Image (cartoon, rainbow, N blue to C red; front, top):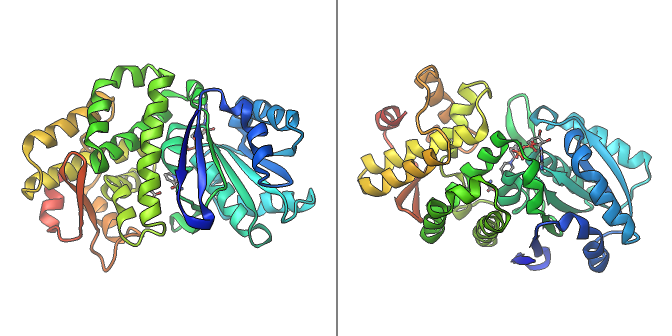
Length: 356
Ligand code: NAD
Ligand code: GLY
């Protein structure tokens, strides 16, 4: 078992990573005595795949738990789902001594974390991520929240889990497109923070795509270590945490311009390729490094070019109104070498247009 630590003082927590861990969550939670009983929150698809295993492990450890589900997909990530789940908890008599377990992808984790933060003014919760994206990114760091019609993730709070249980074996049932969504985030970590990890991704690409579990666990461990260090230094995204948005500024704008038809990972991949070119054009990144990054993105089967059908002016419009944009000036995370980045909002609009 790999064990990491997110050092946030009285809100510190462990991240446990192991193939088959779902089976052992009950025994570990029992020992940690996080809560009296639990509501396991899962989307209806993940519930069919993994809730039985998790519920059995809780029951075997003598922990009382009930399953509560909601329809799968981003369309469920809104306030009405939180309200419905809160009513369900209240009707089942859940109180402040009880806790929530988020079993699923980032949608489940974001909804459950937010629900835990607001139900009875805050109850404990645990993350059991089952997508690669959730295992390397969204389950760690305490960003929780939901979408509103005006935009994604516009309502939320920072609220840390008590523990993160990562079972790499869950990735074996993940559809290919969802694996790619996670891989875009994995590449992100190599570029922003860890040149050796970037080399590792180049070297182990085929094993990763073949879902060899020891290699996937190493990938998850390194990504979570990087994320934990960033979150420890800047939990509330005052500065450093913004590096996790590498590729996302343009990625989110392209995703919005596609009216969310484009997969998140594809949009982030296009966004990463675009800012790599931006860094090269600004003289921050040498051509060889830029080419290596583009090559790795593309070798993993992710796109590096924004389709001509997406109107560039519309993309620029979304860039200017993104929730992280201040005074109409979007910020960009630009690599200066593989493993090193700078954050800037000083980029001329014609340069942005050129890389789009
Ligand atoms: P998701 O939770 O919708 O999961 C994707 C799909 O995979 C769903 O249909 C789900 O049912 C299915 N699935 C999950 N695990 C599976 C498994 N093991 N086998 C088979 N199918 C499985 O989406 P996601 O990509 O995990 O997360 C996206 C969300 O995460 C977005 O809402 C995004 O805003 C959020 N996010 C949050 C953070 C954060 O820091 N909180 C970071 C990145 C993304
Ligand atoms: N996924 C970006 C962050 O957690 O800050």
